[in-house]
View (cartoon, one colour):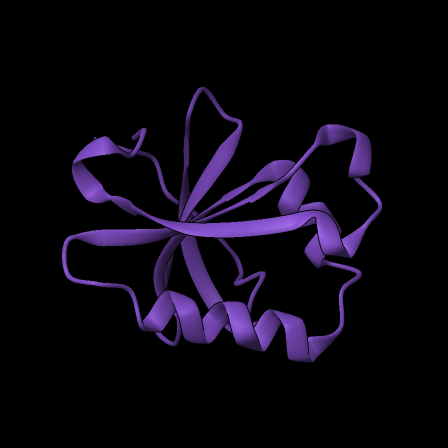
Length: 99
């Protein structure tokens, strides 16, 4: 059984649950508003200082995920940790997600 934690959703700010995946390098969020998505720890840090419009766009993409897939949010490069434009996202098949 996965241990879940409570935290504000990094995309919309509402109360959410998450559990660590990928050896603790990512979080799998379960949000009543955004549905589900995975986010790397570094991408989560960058998004914390990103404008609300960018986060809302990612929330919409999370809600619009194709059936059987989940939005995964990461950084293009760890060297760009402070650059909000370095955040990238893609849909991944649920069967291929770490978890």
